[in-house]
Image (cartoon, rainbow, N blue to C red; front, side):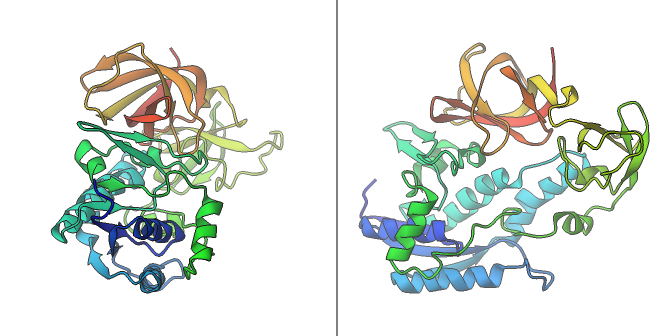
Length: 364
């Protein structure tokens, strides 16, 4: 793909996408920016930042002297991402909307829009690397392991990767900020965003209550002792420590408590003490909804690396068994808090092979 073609950059208002646009412009691309609005603001709380995001994106586009368009994907986001997000929470699982958001919005709806604008490629501020061969594309981890975002990109397909550019593949975050500062970009000091993809840094439990009714119940220890109350099983995740409200329990040592299980029929949250409690450790995982970037799954027994959460150091494992609806993965070392609804992502060396959705963790 020629570096003098037309690329459309998803400009979010943050420094990463701003530097992505800067680098592509320096490489000779004709750059157009698009700001995606994917959530209809419905309150005026401080964490609703879409207006500020757009203001910052426009300031960057003005500094770089590139055109910027705005596009509203709120309907697509609700239908393709948020409705599935709510379905998973209703099932008391813990979904990862960023994975779906990348597949369905940033690299599908946005890609389709960019092609309609005459683009040869799209670019984002993701920290990842894509290698494009004559027949296939390969997704690899970026240089900065602390920032690598391939965990969130594993569901992309060959067509999406063929059109994707990741200009930050060889940069660390401090280097990105330095480039932004040297170029005079107005947002070079803007802090990194967190929170739900496109929805922002909201008070998550209060936000979720607006869509899913709470169903409070009791918090129990492993031996059945009631030691507190929860606000609804859907608001908690495996291994969670914060927000349980059971700091001092009569007759128990002053050690932190962690969620180890959800007793759905009895609407009870089961907790235990100890970060690495045996109930949180699993040698095996069952995963479903598998997606392989190269279309074919690695044969059972092939040595692999995997992550069950973002920024986790890659763990050695192999696929024990393939099945029609998923696979069984055996890890060399027990994994903590294998959470249903989250993703497991596979690697061979630095290449991201694909992944699936965790159904359960267990010990053989």
